Image 1 (tube, one colour):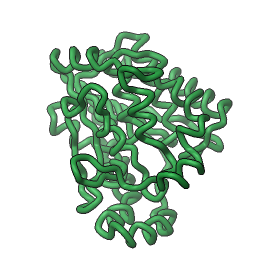
Image 2 (cartoon, rainbow, N blue to C red; image 1 turned 30 degrees about the vertical axis):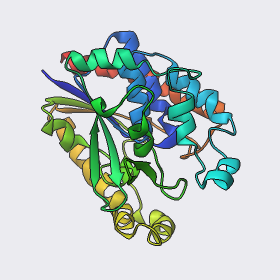
Image 3 (cartoon, rainbow, N blue to C red; image 1 turned 180 degrees about the vertical axis):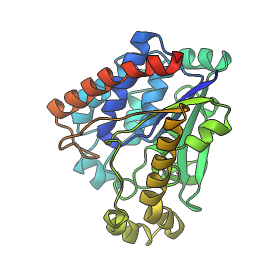
Image 4 (cartoon, helix red, strand yellow; image 1 turned 60 degrees about the vertical axis):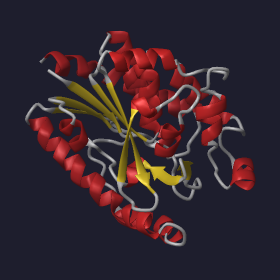
Length: 283
């Protein structure tokens, strides 16, 4: 039976997903298809490469560096988060904590799929990058998937601009089943009963309309899209085709919160909650 996992991202909240995936590595759980949105794509890259603890260090240590995110980056580059530092300087072969590119390729050769979801900034539609689009020392597609509007300038790959995959396909379960998955684990970074209020995005939408009006329309409805696919995931969960893994609460954690005590608590929740995946996989 072909199994898949989706990590929906959520900025610093997705240290919860790090806990889930570290536990999966400890349990020897391997998914046939891994689909990452935003920070979820970064988490899954380390998971596929079997680099347990790598993303934990990014959240708990590297994220506090001014070079990682901060007002200095915003003033110099126009982006609050330095995606090239994260997925370039830190992750390249000569970086401080390289992504094990060779290990990833070996997994691809064994048939494992890695899909990274980004949003085309011109059309507002989802782009699904295959993991084989990654090259050694060129992990830009993960940066594109993680490019939060307004927080960052649009991320450019081969002359095209991209934003966070959460704008266009925040819970890509349809993509997972389209790729042949029969069972899918969906990792959320908000409680299972959380539904977006679309009105919350209006200020961001208004700013995006100045530069990327079509993508702004995707941003305007992304809450509704998330809510729709969350309900769909819940329906599929009743049929035994989906398992939703989500924190019972996230406390004060927001997109860019970097308090280690809060992140540690979310990580531990993810680590514990992942135990239910084993029963789902063998059930």
